[in-house]
Length: 229
Ligand code: CA
Image (tube, rainbow, N blue to C red; front, top):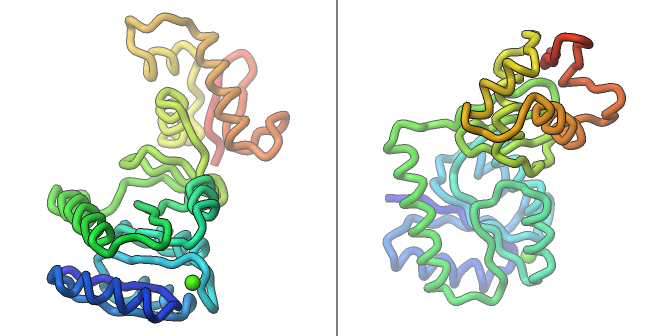
């Protein structure tokens, strides 16, 4: 039986959610404090978390971020304000879903079922943990194809992601632009090694604090690039 934790300080809402989910056969626990909720979410083996945004102790933003650093379990965030949902999305905290209060309990149950089914498929396929690369402040999730810089998610195009990942997987190895072009772009691609330069520039704009003094992707003049560790 799947175990769900509801972190919600409004008792009436928590109870309503709990009742509906229990009727659907889930084991449900509620927690009204953010700080205790976070500890429980990390320590007890819940399969899914329903997380309110404004909570005493620690807020939902921080809780979601902390859960995501350690666990792949689905997180559904709820808020009374549509604006907050937009903000949460913008922050890229890694929540799996968002709902604006008030919502119908049956809608919540439907979403919980969908996320648990997806999560179980992921576990069942043997992909217990996403494959990630972490070098200093950069975290690259190769499974989900997502990138975080100091905890903040950055959007990457497909080729930017492939190029960054390839370099980060081969740290300190110097690659020529020709090598990178042939590794990342297939032979039929239109473009040339200038494409590599353009992509490196775009990646640096996303990952470097100061693009004039790159800390991660270093230019080796006359040769190419390397990812420094
Ligand atoms: Ca609240």
